[in-house]
Length: 433
Image (cartoon, rainbow, N blue to C red; front, side, top):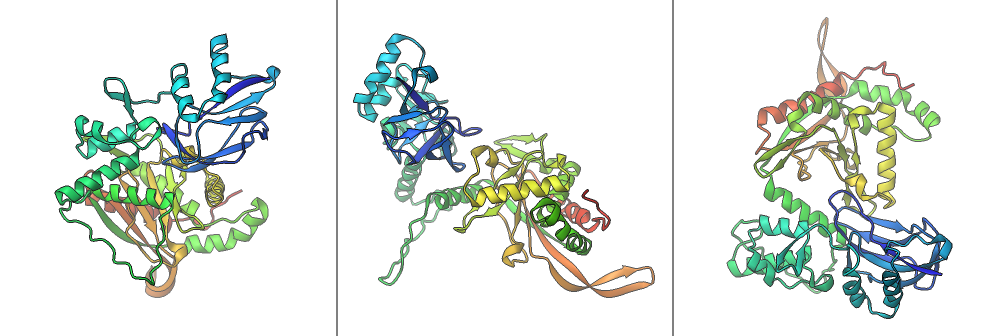
């Protein structure tokens, strides 16, 4: 029998670490190749991680709740010699060390293995080559003007004293209390909540905390304004009502309005490419690909935003299937980090909740987001060859929030009007097959 290491896999673009949520297997249990063995949380998504080999889980090196770097050993697996796929090199010295690790505590294991394996993730040493900071921590330090000297004084609660995102936010909170300024730079302290004996206190879950941090960050970064347009979707509603039963019978799933919205947005982004951008300090990055995120409501009420990559290359059936697939996997907590990265624009459909309009918050580092409300019947003036008439039409409000630092009102307003134009011009004779 041979002993190999299970390595923390790369969980997606720009992700360098993950928190071990749950080990699905116990030490001593058998595991099969491609069987999920643990759940990992990153700043993008929670996901299950499968093994790449069959064997016995001999030792867990990173405990639940601890942070592991990409490329770091997280478990030791005993496998048949004929199936050995060890990540260590074949030197006898390294093999002996791997076996010796079984007798060491996890914290000692990381120190010893660190001398042999390339477990240091992307990051630069601030102090004499002994302390490393993740790109996220360095970004927070830069944005909040934390000097290297101050950074070195922050006590790290991560593995081996590493400074985590939570440590950074705790430091900023303490700094706020001492200076009398809030993190958002408003100059005012947020008063503490008054709790009575009859109140229920509910701790935020991890995703709620992450959403809270990102929304506050977006409000702090972007100069957000919102433009509104009302669109007449009568043709689209009639068309969908006509084909939805046949579509479900042929494709085995429902067709919603969302893929048509995504298609119209993709067309408008081609017309106005300066909406399909992101901002990096004083630089505007014009995106070549059109990757549209679609907000999905989870059963617990939280939102997640999977991304349709190259949305402009799909036809309506392709978009419908992609939207349904991502929504289903999102509700089942089966999305992976790649599903949530790379978005260049976001759609939020608040119509299913009965909302007629809203003012969505931009997903950083994007510069715009579109919210579509519920479709309602209402009387409207319709122009005909014989004069104007009052008719019942299917109407929907669209709310376009954009970053006024780089998107002026004219451009932001023209974009959402173009999306409405595409939807209003929807062809009743559109064929899917």
